[in-house]
Image 1 (cartoon, helix red, strand yellow):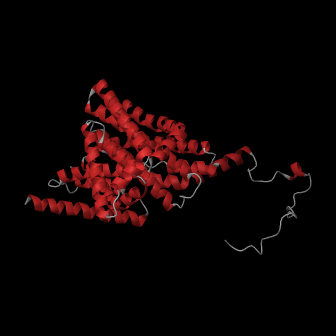
Image 2 (image 1 turned 180 degrees about the horizontal axis):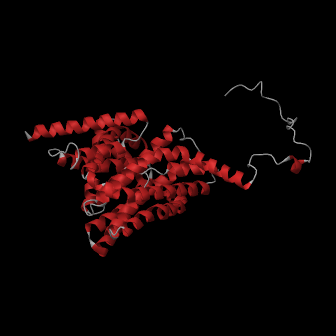
Image 3 (image 1 turned 30 degrees about the vertical axis):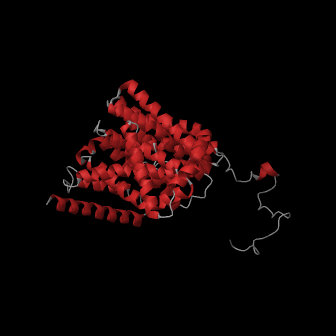
Length: 425
C-alpha cells in the first residue's frame, strides 16, 4: 500500500511540474517561482501535504543540486575561469560588497547571528545564471556588446561559489575555527589542483571519459559527478563544489555531449529540488517575513543594477548598455535556493525569507531587464529638460553656430544622397 501511495504522489508531483512548466513557457516566464509555489502547496500546511514520497523527493533534490553545479561547470573551461579571474576581479569585489553585505546586515539586524548572516549574504549575492540566460535569449540580446560583461559577472560569482560553499558548510556543521580553516584549505587546494590538471591535462581527462555511445557517456559522467560529490561531502567540503569541479575538468566534445544528455535530467531533478525547498517551508511562516524580504529585494535589485553598470562602464560600454547590463543581473534563483537549502536545517528562519525573496526577484528580474534602460533614459531626459541643457545629439542653437535665423540645415554636398536608391536591409 505504501508503494502505491509513493507512485501516486510521485506521479502527481511530476505531472504538476510538467503542467506548471508548460504554463511558464506559454507566458514566457521562469518556472522557478511556480515550482516553489507547488512545493508550498504540497508541504506541511499546504493544500495537499505529502507523506509517502518525502524521502524520495529529498534524495531527488540532492541529485538536483549536484546536476545544477555539474552543468554549470560544463559550461566553462578552466582557461575561461582563469581568464575571468585575472580580468574581472575588481568587478567581482564590487559585486560582493554591493550585494552580499546587505544580506549579512539584514540577518544581523534581525538578530539571527553570524552563521545566518553568512548564509543570507550568499542568498542575496548570487544572481541566477539560468534565469538571466533565458531573459537575454528572450529579449534577443545575446549578441549585444554588454552580454559578455554580464556573463563575466556570472562567471566570477560561480567561481566564488567554490570558495564560499565550503566556508558556509563548515560554519553550518559547527566544526570550529580550526576545522573550518582546514576545510577551506582542502577546498582551495582541491580547486587549484583541478584547475591546474584541467589546464595542463584536460584533453587527456576528456579523452578518458569520452565515448561514442551516448548511454555510456551519460553513465560515466553522471557516475563520476555523483562519486566525486559524495567524496567531497565526506571531506566536509561540499557536494555541489565537487560536482562543479568535475564539470570544469571536462571540456571539448565531451562537455558538449554531456550537456545535451544531462539537460533533461538536470531540468527534472532541479525542479524536484525547488519543490523540495517549498516542501520544507511552512506557508504560514512567509507573511511575517514578507516585508523584510520586500525591502531586501528592492535594495539588492538596486545594488545589482549598480554592479552591472560598473562592470559595463569598466569595459567601455556606452551608457545604454550599462543600464541594460545592470537590469539583466537582478534575477536571483537556483543558487540562492541552494544556499538557503543548506542553511535551513540549522536556522529554519532563512527558508521562508529566502522563498519570498527569490519569488519577488524572479518576477522582478525580467521586468528589470526590459525596462531599466528605458526608465534611466527617460529620467535623464527629464533631468536634462529641467536643467535646460541641450540633448547630446542636438545641434547647438543658431546664435551659437552662425547668428543667422533658424532655418533647416542644407544637405551636406559632400555626402551622396542615398535616400532613394538605398535598398532596405
